[in-house]
Length: 427
Image (tube, rainbow, N blue to C red):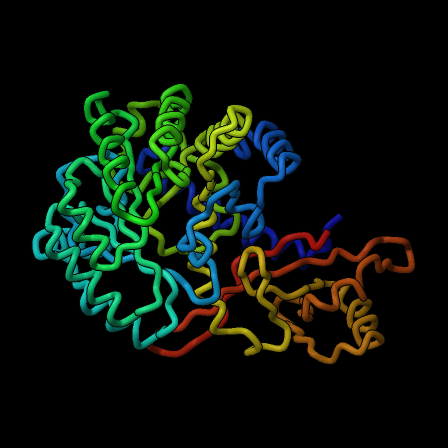
């Protein structure tokens, strides 16, 4: 049974999530049942684990075969950053993330300030390993895309350069110019509701790109209900020589909810593994997308397809953001350590009547870095000492309820500080 101090802490975090969901439901959004599809998900994950699929970033990223260096560096030490030259696009996808980005209308009209972005990146991280160009549609103004690639190559001569495109505007001349400007990788996306003629056009562009650009990838969200279509596409991508595909968790980007509701979609609940105000414009994961992706990976392995498979979940996008924030804080606080899977800063915690017992055991283990919070009635300590206090019991046999607390390091104009975002049973 939880002690009162621990219960107060748990309730406070739970209420944050409840208020978040309640506010969105009041706007008409529909969430699935809590932890829907969990049994199916766990079964598929275990099968993929047994098949030798690589689990990365605490299971937020799963890969088999070819994995783009940009996907590795997305949560890597040197990092990856993506820019846009324009938000204009000849497509009109109801699930496009761009409308959920700051200053969308202005950047749509005027173009994106990519020059400023590259200057900022160069000043902040001169060892940036991977740089992406997205849109809108970068091929609407290929001259501007060439200028971007040349500028990126000048500032980061060793960086891996990639570009995202719908593909249906690509010509041989464009492919050659992009390659000569330093493009290392091009990623194509086929839309689920594209007519067969349009899908074939993109597949033809993929074959064209294979003749000129070093690495050709596919990347697309996997929409619930599209299983047979996705199988056809995976076969077609494999036949066209695509090196690998990023299978993205399908998301609702806080706009066009009527289109999602009309198709019968619901949002995943809980919305995040750890509640936090994430900056990624993807929004909220749609329930059922993750399980479909996992089942497609199993199917592709059974089929013996040669292209690489990478499941990039919404949580994996968040991992990248959290690592960028928390890498700055390594060693800044004696109780906080970066978890190498989730990239959250973590500490151990005990609450209420458990505090004296844990304090005594930590002292016996040589731990002097502890922080007591009288208002919260808690004791924080480095997670590296967790095994020294695990299994403690009170005189009456009641077990100590150890927790792991999650933090993010925020840097604002008024200073830098740690914010606590969650607690979990230490197990």
